[in-house]
Structures are given as C-alpha cells and as structure tokens.
Image 1 (tube, one colour):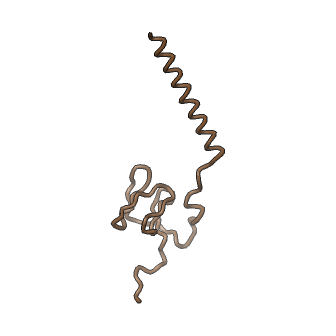
Image 2 (cartoon, rainbow, N blue to C red; image 1 turned 30 degrees about the vertical axis):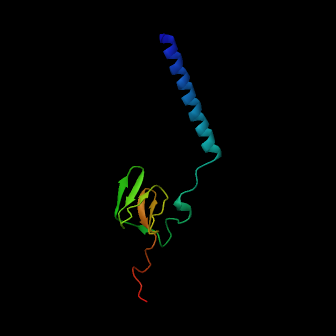
Image 3 (cartoon, rainbow, N blue to C red; image 1 turned 30 degrees about the horizontal axis):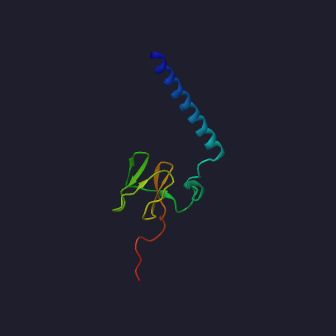
Length: 102
C-alpha cells in the first residue's frame, strides 16, 4: 500500500515538472505585453512622481479620488490621471491645469 502512495506522489511531481516546463516554453515563444514604459518613457515631460498611493497585494492602490483604483504594473487608473510605473505611482497630467474657467 505504501508503494502506491509513493508512485502517486512521483507521478504528481513529474506532472508538475512537465507543467512548469510547458509554461516556460510558452512564455519564451509568446512573451507578455510590454508595460507602460514603452508608451511613456521616464523622461517624458508629463510623467512625474505622484502621491496618495499605498502598496496592495501585487500592485498599488491609488487613493487620489473616490474610486480608489487597484493598479497592477502598467495599469492606468479609472480617472486617467495616475499610473503604476515600475511599482511607483506616477501622474500623467503634471503641466495641465487643475481647473478651467469657461
């Protein structure tokens, strides 16, 4: 009875190793999409450090507006004002006016 348990464990270990190898091959042929860095390079005049963000899970939680968006790497918030850029919150509207009068 003990050998069947060991055989099953060895089979599961072999299947896990095969799945990990298949995932590595898949990622090598189909790399993940590029992040936000390709569309707005760090030296872009509108990309500036932002505030009002806290680390959350595997990204950042923006606390600038009432939406409190969760921003994984490269994601832009619902308000289109903040972005997670390399694990840090950045603002995209730095030189723009805060309010405009008609």
